[in-house]
Image (cartoon, rainbow, N blue to C red):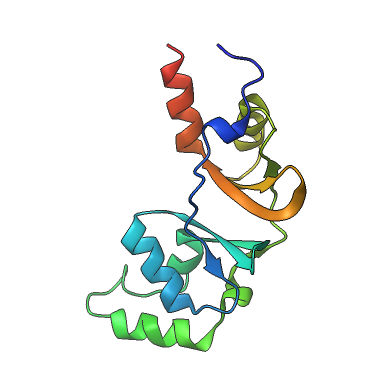
Length: 141
């Protein structure tokens, strides 16, 4: 097993992200379209938050009652991304090791971490998830 492998070797580099000014409806559509669970929130290229599928599900009724899609859209229209996202997310650098990421994911309540550029800690460079780490570990066997 490679002990100093950087997270940049397993992270998703072409990140699906949402702009801070976007709507929650658009964020929900991106999550559904790309079959993802976490969306970094950016202002330009600067990472400002994280929005998860769970965050959006907490606002909706469609999972509880059939035919409530219109109600969900009304709720999404009443709120903005900034009101729902996690502000100042825990981020890691491209050069941080996979071991370090695994330690964070196993001890803290995160399932995904945004990855920022080594030379600019505000610039989103990628995202790494628990699934990425598990796949990496499986490849080692």
